[in-house]
Image (cartoon, rainbow, N blue to C red; front, side, top):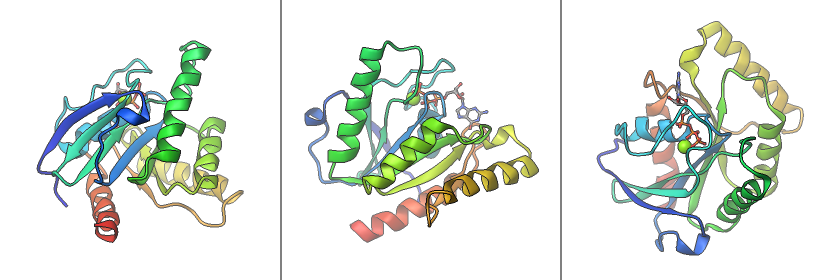
Amino acid sequence: MKIETAKFISSKVHLKDLPNSNLPEFAFIGRSNVGKSSLINYLTNQPKLAKTSSTPGKTQTINHYLINQTFYFVDLPGYGYAEVPLSIKKQFEKMIQDYLLKRETLACLFVLIDVRHEPLKLDLEFIQWVGENQIPFCLIFTKCDKLSQNQLDTKIQNYKNKLLETWEELPPFFLTSASKNMGGNELLVFMDKVLQEIL
Ligand code: GTP
Ligand code: MG
């Protein structure tokens, strides 16, 4: 699949205000600053489509982008950003949970993980929650340009081992770099397959 068109549609806080449409959506989630918005820009080849920032907490709403007139990318706020007040954090969590549990058109959730970190409790707990709620998901390791091939192999194997402590089966996973344009094709091939099963 090739992305021919990508258009910003809306930026919302409440589920009821999201696009009223049957088109399937792929959502991007992960800790603040993991590279969700950058990955969307890389995949769509539009560097300014989703707003990015080196300061965590940039994306604070649910953002819909219409791709090829046939499906959406959804850029979600990051979780685990320590600097926001607790009340706001709770509001974010509610928004994300509402979306993930109730959005019927969600085709697959991409959970982004910064490949440089050891498995973090927050990410592992989130993955657990996603699995328990039977939300279809994949893992995407981001910022792979920051490590050597050897380091990457070790990190990925570590992560798999960690997941296998609680999971019998591993979710699909992908290695990407938005700054070095790596891994996008594999991701698009995967999305194409998911779409063919739905559409
Ligand atoms: P929030 O919206 O705050 O939750 O963050 P986000 O997950 O959308 O992250 P964003 O795309 O804004 O990127 C955060 C920072 O990481 C920016 O400074 C990006 O330039 C950088 N970044 C993102 N992806 C990559 C990557 O693949 N490689 C490298 N080296 N840097 C990256
Ligand atoms: Mg963002």
